[in-house]
Image 1 (cartoon, one colour):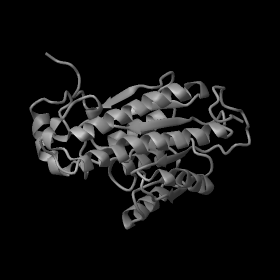
Image 2 (cartoon, one colour):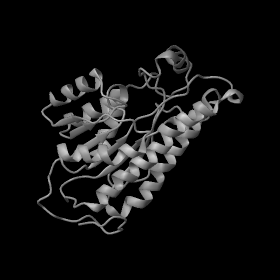
Image 3 (cartoon, one colour):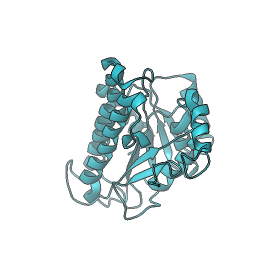
Image 4 (cartoon, helix red, strand yellow):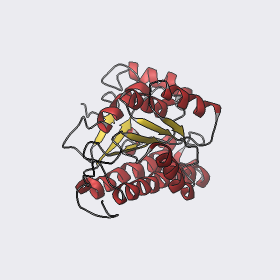
Length: 272
């Protein structure tokens, strides 16, 4: 058994459940659901979190079960840190020990506008969900993982979905950029902490992705893509993000950890 905060390698108790189990935040729709769908199709059991219980969350869980895997809804506001351990415990009670944590939940700005007009309320909202909740959920997952007994037959990973705005400034949503930069650092920190335990950690930074959250700006995004903002002449899709996460969570990228995966169609490639 691995004791908490240990730097030793994972134990080799062959009696441990040999199914991959993923916990995904913000999973009722959009990128989160497509991540869950791709993982389910790869044979992962799924604990699906969203802000609150809803028909959409329950319908998404039902769809996941259609791929022949076990799935459970674990509603709860990730900004409420007091819920973190309870949510993870419920997932493990229903599905068994977690092997994979995907921190996908996020919020955008209250309204886009001048950097000089950002309000403390909008800033704090972005920080609470995108940065603070990310840190403490990753901490809660890491503690549970290192305190348990892990199977050598399974792959263990922690994946943060941040944003291209973790490194690229957008002055009409500055508070979002700051919070996503914080999320990106969380990935680096936990990659450093968990590497000797054999846990891969990645930071996926999506660019212009067609989702419900980006719907108000899609026409502008498409115009900029048509003008050459991205090397690949198309907007990204949630399903593509799901494929990327599944590749990482399945151990398809060995000898890597702490990497930023720029899922942006080449948007941030330096050009002149």
